Image 1 (cartoon, helix red, strand yellow):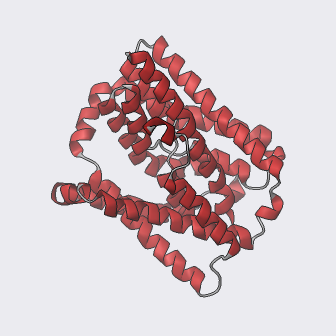
Image 2: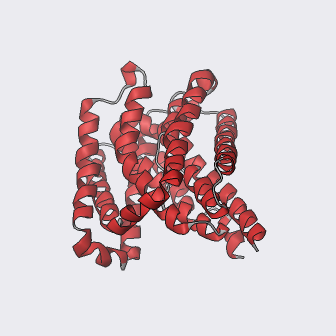
Length: 320
């Protein structure tokens, strides 16, 4: 029954959908919009401060032991996925609603998740310690690489500005580094208050989703989307995930990885982080674009949970 529960949308996914609907019906307008934006800036800074405080330095040191595995996770996350995203944007942009193709590219440039990568690796009987190191390193690198890669791949008129990079540094990197520097003193306090930190993490994401989908409604994004657009987006998301799962599995076997390391590579290399993607998008893109940008990410987030839950069970049954 615990496994079957993974196949259904969790409460946070349902909260995301409810927030998107509420924002579409009742977006923040007038004086409320700038106030909401200021609250979002503060919540994002707090989110990454707590992430930095949770990251153990011992985990970073231990990560060097499995460097081949980490290189492969890095390659899947920041090379293979971006190439697939760029190909999708280049050749299928004309078939997608405005902004959606760019959202798929943005999805492909994001770092891996931490929690679900570790959870599925554990369920499947994989190398959990390596998964912790790889997923954590991916999130740290994503703070730098996602904005840089987005600026590299976007067209000149839509490129990431110097100001946006500065906002990334101030709102994400500085709080993250500050939190990590304080980890020896506050790390245990933060770790023992997962309920509080979970509220901060999810609250920040829900605020950004509300703001983004409100702006999308104001700019008539949904009038431009048809059922066929959502169907095509779903098929593309499934295709992206399937391609990466197949390639990472084949690569791990060709390189002679052990089964536990293969499992860690497959689950860490195939994930994309909603927790990092939504806040970074709120800084990189104009408010009118954020709804379309994060829509592929929200859809991919649920698909990766469903598919990887089934895959983790399959690995676990073979290991019995």
